Image (cartoon, rainbow, N blue to C red; front, side, top):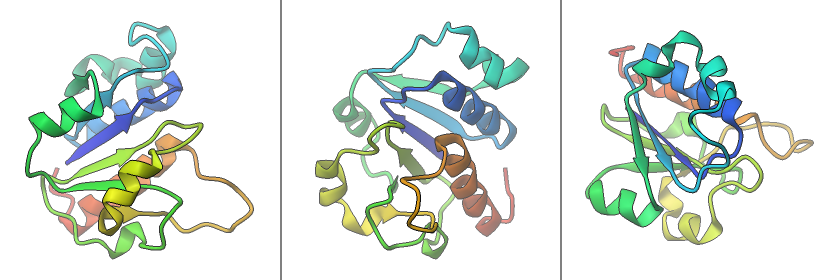
Length: 150
């Protein structure tokens, strides 16, 4: 599996997601610009002593990421769809992308891929769940479907 963070802004979230990626044998892709330096201690603190073990790929742009990963199945986590993350039949090498904490994945990307947009249901009171929590919720559903075959 692959988690893709499009222009992440908060180092703690990226560190937490990196830790979860290590413990599930998942590759973490970061698409620049990043809202922090990967050398920041907040990233390493959140990732604890796992950060150096993250299978990390860093991309200069979304276009570079797509060019290097042609033919992938890429899902887009967003609050702007009705398709639940749990209604998708995940495959072993799928990619799940999350947008920046303050604004989410750009609508032009979502509009080009409506059939690949997924959401986590919640009451309408809030904007969205925490990024690191959302990533783990969807990642573990994918692995549950795959028999937790890490």
